[in-house]
Amino acid sequence: MIADALRSGDRRALGRAITLVESTRAEDEEAAARLLESLAHVTPARRRIGISGAPGVGKSTFIEAFGLRALESGRRVAVITIDPSSVKSGGSILGDRTRMERLSRHAGAFIRSSPTRGTLGGVARRTRDVIRLVEAAGHDVVIVETVGVGQSEVAAAAMTDMFVVLMAPGAGDGLQGVKRGIMELADLVVVNKADGDLAGLARHMVADFRQALSLLRPGRSFWTTRVVSCSALTGDGLDEVDDAVDGWFDAARNHLDAERRTQAAQAIRNEVADLILARMMSRNSTNDPSLTLAADVACGRLPLRTAARRLLDEP
Image (cartoon, rainbow, N blue to C red; front, side):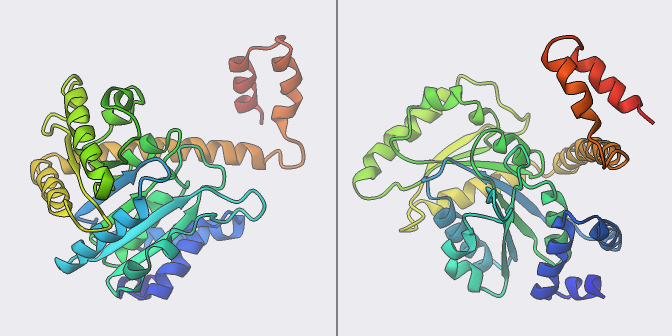
């Protein structure tokens, strides 16, 4: 049984299980649900960490360096990288596993790229299910890397414990970073690429961010956002990153269960909304009912809210 192989740490079984739960085929839906139900007593990961940042900040290099250090401390690491989808094949475009070669070769690590397939928020629809599967396979540190655009930070923060934002020297001053809103979600800001000619600029950027963040109300009652710099390429500063991550989980010890329950409640509501839409569309599979109302909404004859209610009330 795939669930038993999964629990034993079989990497191929884990890959097959993820493919199943990510499948959009109707015939796979029930099998995926049964598999997930069979994992009812899975121990959640000790650490779920979301990592985001604009393209070019060195996310893959940073995650590989961070993951290798976690492996050295005896942890098992799973990295779920959320890639934008190809409009032709629906598959992942970036394939971050190829950029984390050392980490992917380690027996205690598992890396999986998941395509968004058009899902808003920069994470795949089934990312929470994938987290459950890698936890069932014994990975106690789960890293979710987002696309790093739009609402990806909000979606990733809603399914992880700690949220880390990577910046690069020269990417804008501290105040500009705060305006983008992402700083309000960040538990840790890491200025990466702090080496060579950029080392001095990185120090100034850290100071700018610390000053800007001091003007914001802390997002959590038990933690004030920290800012550190490092070079994932040379390893300089990674001790400070580890200390900050350890400090966050120490501070969050008495809050983590409640945070995860709140996240689970929101995830249930999101899943219900998805199921309602899917079932509504399936009962009208030969004729999309929204198209019959679209003309009236487009020209202003019918309010959007009224159209939506009519759609829900259709037998």
